[in-house]
Image (cartoon, rainbow, N blue to C red; front, side, top):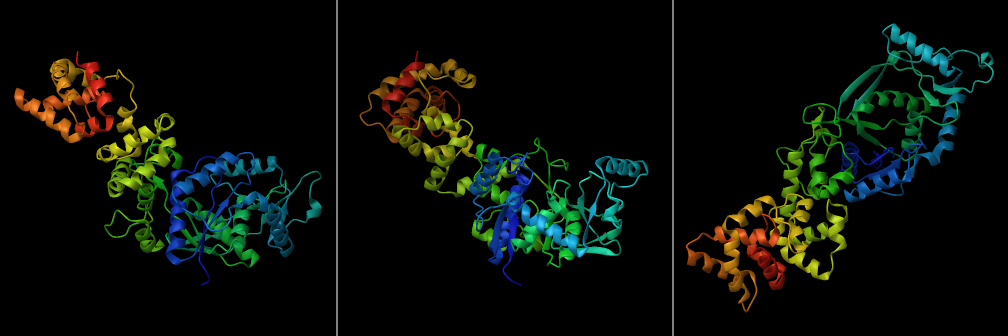
Length: 472
């Protein structure tokens, strides 16, 4: 076979949703696995619903997931003349015909079929009629002269051999009465012209494959290899909706997930490689093959995604994760406000605090939340649980520790820890008993990175000031 070419062909009517992202990933992985090409086509023939903002959202989502495509992006609407040319060719060869049904006739046809308990389909009334019988003032559509006898076989790389009786495949519209191509025609022409060898897409397109095969055959073109992957369902087995996680890729970035974690999670939705759960990008490319894609719908699971993200955050070294954090900060919940105040001094503080911050974080948003104490203004807002600690003897400990910490000649995690431990031993208290009020005074919370790291990162003046605010 010549070079393998896959493609991702989204409609730009909104964000890059999670199902589309997985389809793009499977196409990208397969092309990388076989050393082929991965192309991107924006199916934007619906000019009313397709917006530049939606196109950019799709491109942005693919870039964030690091799914690079080969060549230029193809915009389907720029190829309308080519689609019309092919429709005219099929008309001339007898593989298509003009249909002069009015909208009212089509509505009546569907209603009669509905009442008779039949599936709605075109009844072929203009299939063999002479165009001279056409009513005045009715612009025709152009329909495929579909094969009526026998069967159309789809030898699918995921679904196996699927047979469609041709009697169930009606004469679909190729060109609308306004001269614009339908999805069915445009996809076939574009895939052919782009040299697509493998059409990897959701299994909701399986019936379309049978219809499109007949268009390919009518044109004498090679039919691509089909691979229809199962859809993603929610944890309850129902069709994936927003309440399940059917959000845009941009939403997952805003929730603080790493692109490599989301890629890893998506590839495991419907594809398996033994018991292996975590893959580097190179391992994923080396292992991926369509034969390991299952036929059953996958279930989306936020908890599993979060655990996987935590794994990748722990596996990423400090420097790389810090850069990812800074790059993603403008998109994270609470991130833009933090980014606006990120001067050199604050940047140095976050970098110093980062090893302690990441220990407790499963997402980048949790890193933002954990770093809030560095940006807090005095006097700090104290959370109810922290206020309870301070009210029940905590402030007395602060009052006793304040002069001891003030007297330190050198301010560091080690020297402040020595003072606090010595004070605890002096009064016969456990370290946690005297350290927890410090945490509450310094961060306003009962949880934080290591308290002595907090003291070190905040520095002498800010630390003593926050302690003094509460030591009353």
